[in-house]
Length: 315
Length: 315
Image 1 (tube, each protein chain N blue to C red):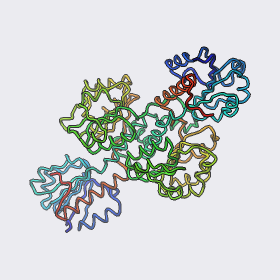
Image 2: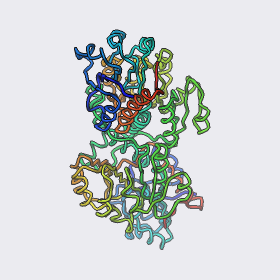
Image 3: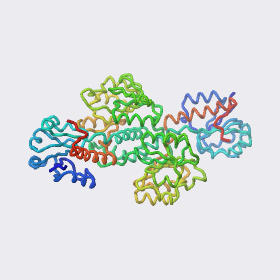
Image 4: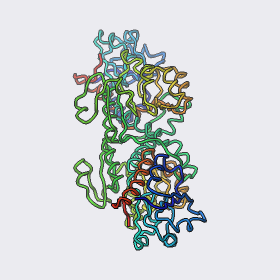
């Protein structure tokens, strides 16, 4: 089985490898590539039975109504809140997302940015380039033996915990549900408010939802140990920004963040002026491997749908 | 028991904490601090029974002869080739060094610099500072699943292997002696020339000795896989620099080095011009923890000697 016509919206030609486009083209009789704001979008959807959309590309009720033959929406991202999945469901349209492809990329990024900060690699590299040979002052700390708190022991948190164990850290976690298999590995559970003040490193990996909004409230940020490093690869909505700024202004804690689309840039720029605040572009998820996995999952989703046993269905 | 007079040469007041100087002063009746080129050095040694010297500070036959009461030389470093240990032995003088304090610091530095390169953290940080939000091109690779070759499975190599296991790498090693306990952990032994061409990452941790000189000769450097990353925290004498330069000039491999005193700076500066060559100052060994451990071991050596059961004796 094949789709008659697949419309790719907000996905560039370069987003998939040549080999992978060949695989896609074996699954669709006709493929149309459009930008999200293309004026032809609606008319192109009239005879489409498949839409594949990139991160953040809205597939609204209105667009779904413009595609009476639509059977399948493939989201080229983990998040799918920009697709009206409920309305799609009511029309018998299957929505599949691409999840889990970046677990390893994010977990490794956490350690890269953490060690970068702890050992001042940027400054060190600069001195190296200038030909400075000798050791030039104490550079931060080691991970071994440190209390390493993982908040949210989902797929990324689990990998972070495992890597931290390899470093010989004293790894502890808080998560909504206890994970006895990880406790057996030596990752100790502690309630949130007991764990926070003990941590030398805090990494945050829980899903963003109303429950986790303001998770790190002013009181909890106040409790973070002097000299601790916080690594946040989730939405800043989990943090009280004013309380954060207060701690950063004294320089007694460090924060490593990633920009994310949901938060106004001004918020980050305000924090960025503090020396112990490192803000990275949204690169944590992106490695050659994760990008390849993402394509493989996208195509696998289409194949499985066409074969009659859809996977990664989100509606 | 106490030493009557201890002469500290080439060790600054700031090299030990206040608390540790207090401990030292409980073990010596008199303490004299001198720079290596102090004209008083010889005369001060006349009634000294203890010398403590910093890295690279020569304690020659001549200086030992100037200290007829000398019983003990404490070296504030792992290397002690700058002390005439044989002559000291012939005079009944005990020489103790400080070893193993930086194992963890070096092992963690390897992963810091490796991830810094693989994820282009320097460039990424810069973009972050400029407010660039979005992902800006594929950044390197993951460690998981990669063939990770550890050359020299001594104390540092062992920790590197353990951390690499945590990352989920396919960890292999070559070492002069097989280490069955590490093989049981999943670190696979391979002969040098079979291992080199398979590795995505190569880290070098063997001791610098005539046997390991030119270990990475032209033929072996030629065999390194395209796209591989080499991390060298040992002497560059183990590498054929011309062959290295050849590979670097095509940019198909990356080298992460540390400067070291033995090698002319010109050698490093020649390599530094290549984009995939990162040279750091000699910082790998230095963390707050390693610096504290070094002091603790130095003082422990003195205590143990005075108690009649010297440890870390090297002659």
